Length: 385
Ligand SMILES: *[C@@H]1O[C@H](CO)[C@@H](O)[C@H](O)[C@H]1NC(C)=O
Image (cartoon, rainbow, N blue to C red; front, top):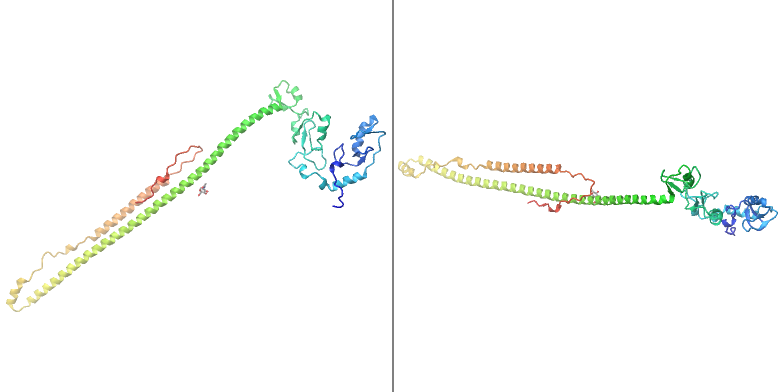
């Protein structure tokens, strides 16, 4: 920092003729500095007048002063170029690839702040100054910097095209309007722009309306997704409930049937036991009477035989073995038939229901915006009785 005793200022080291950094700086007798070439050519132009003036202070010199390079200034300019980073304009002043560059700057170009439609040149802040200050540029039209300056120039006449030929629907210059577009219907380019701008705005409005409508459609579709998901969830859970109920009902009935068969089995067995008991009692009696008859048949005493014989009974004719037919098999067969019938009926009903359900299809969604009333899914009863 110690060596950097003075702050170099680019502007102070610029030539007021070319506005660039001094090149081979010379100091003329009045004290003002210029590039050797700039002041030489300036004085060359003045040569016929035999006087030589300073472009800045207008002091005149005769004869033409001899010019010697100012080495001190030349060194300063060199220093400035070396330490350019500190002295140079901030980076944002330089033209990037997107920016319009000043056409006058040499080396690294600054951003243009104005384009001249007369010169067809874009200028940075510094180089546009003559346009503001010198009456020579009074009629030049300055516009926002644009890269398309050439586009606004007529390629035949090299003139700015400021006229719109309605007949041929193209931009033309004033020479065109007097030449091949003579007699055509023309308006100023600005007026045509205003007209087309209005059309454009109408068109843009239509686009924006359409965008709005379509955006609403997208929102509607998103709502539709929600409704679909909610409905599907609700129906899935309802049908799960119904099937769970059905499964429970079938299990209850299975247990009922099982218990019923078992209780019938028990009562049949009780009946069999009862009959068995009766039969055994009868057998005991028959065996006892048979034994009595046997004893009597062996009696030697005739009187005893004859007195006791009538007291002994003869076996009853009613003893009939067919009485013990309980027909148990017909009961079991009937139950089996009934259960099978339930199975067949259930299978049929389930198949029929499934066929119906599997044939149902979601209706193809159409690209229209009608809201159909939806069935109230809460109205389905999920209870199984
Ligand atoms: C709708 O359901 C699908 C499938 O379950 C899911 O991926 C999606 O995120 C759900 N959308 C909304 C908006 O709930």
